[in-house]
Image 1 (tube, rainbow, N blue to C red):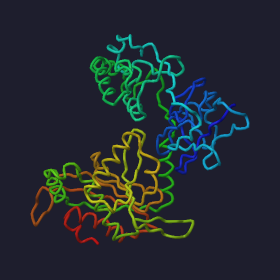
Image 2: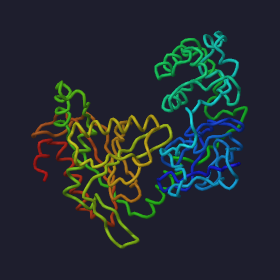
Image 3: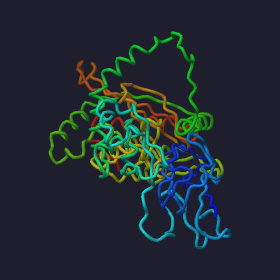
Image 4: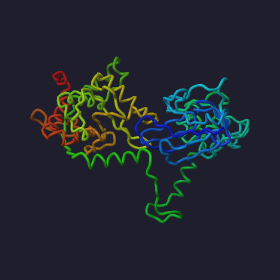
Length: 451
């Protein structure tokens, strides 16, 4: 019988997803829970597991195509009666769940087998000349459906890592043999390719690159489809800019005491594991200040005609990734000490850079921080994430002359930029919050006074 798998609701309130890449092909035998494809929503890249065991009959969408939730995604030829050919639905009696992360209920006996993959000739173990001489991105990727050749053995995070590095896993498999490929294998292979051909490739690119503004043999412009994170970010920023009346205030603080405190932390072996930096201190100061200015930790609920004030802080930290800007959240950040805050920020950033931030981590923030200082920027006018009443941009720390105790001295200075929703927050409240954050940075001991 033919069974269709429709794009499931990924549990994040989104209505569509883009097919990043198919990991199966028509005519290919798939096992239960085998990864079928990677899809990108407006918030994250996730893998879709197969709810069936059978043969791929048809792919209803191409890579790069956007598919609406509930639309047919892939069709299988599976064993069973035609009357059983219903798309699996979560919650139905005897049905198989199809949400990402849930997999599917077992319906086949025996151990699932890895699917066959077709590799190009350059991926052959005997073709050592290609492996030794060619740059790692010069050979075609593996393609499905060649009998007797398996897909290189690796985990999903390693496959994603290889994709970002531009390394063909088939070539790596030819070097490491039948064992599971690791990140170290990919790094080693990439280094070999770079040593062998990096200099020649760089020279070739320099020679072929046209001067800016000079006519090219091809097109004079580049058109990039608006989708994924960029599409979501654009819609969210337009909604925020034209819904909430933004006000931005600035304050330049002398953070020399904070810099000295961090230096003492780095010298303390007991704290070295946390790697506490300025952003962690700012985040802790924000949580303390929000307790004194609850209007900045709130939501304007237009539908109910209410202002919702939160008694917890789900702190959003803006992270620039290859896919665009995302704002994952640190849950219950107000409960964390300084070391715990530093650990949470580090883990959040590493997960975001690896493209593994889950949809749940991108929802429900109550206040956000944007660390523009990491780019050498001093100040800005950040736009509020939809549903939040405040966002703080943290500028670079700069050593510059400033008045100190009646004299001019070199001091570490930082500019803080606070944007807030003027429907919820008056100017006086915004200024008080910003001064509270600055007070902690100027004199960290003042945090003891915050109740």
